[in-house]
Amino acid sequence: MFLKKKIGLKDLYNFCYLMERYQAFGVSEINTIGKYMNSIKNPGLIKIMEALQRDLKNGTAIPDAMSKHPSFFTPFTVAMARVGLNTGQMGAAWKSVADSLEQELMIKKDLETAMLIQKIFLGFLAAATMLILFVFIPKIGEVLKDMNVELPLITRITIGIGDITTSFWWLFLILGALLVTGYFYFKRQYPEKYDQ
Image (cartoon, one colour):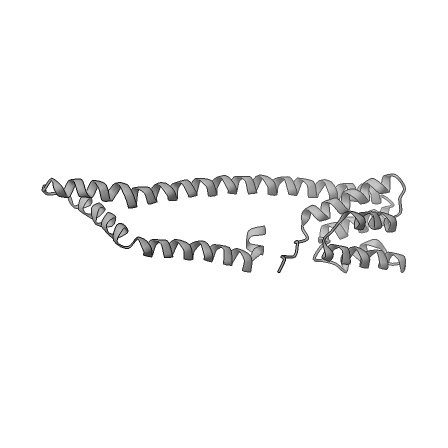
């Protein structure tokens, strides 16, 4: 089964940008929506555009037609379209929304980049910790045990941790797999937590 492509801010930005551009050239909203539909492949978005175009052909004002699709058109977008319609400045309204969405997209991209860097760092940190726990501590523990000397408490605890990790490596592997699976399950079940 193929995953449905999510309708997002980028789609809304593209819509508003095209509306502003074509408005400047005097192309009607109905024709602009038709041109936009020809450029998209997302079935959910195509349905919204078809409904929007149908409403406009039936005489519904664009802000009212947009407000029927709150999953795509934000309250800000609808409000700006209403202001543009009432003032006769639809081009300026579309430009304002497109500029706002462009800023939001840039901020979101910067945040995603920062989060990626954080995840890479945590991955390296986890790998270094595993290397220390599963390789270095057990080797050092073997050398110190062969010396037959009285070791400080903290050293004995550290060696004990090394012994546990080498004896129960399979448990750590299962725990790691469960954590990764849980993370992706939670991310898929509650995507709104990750879109903020």
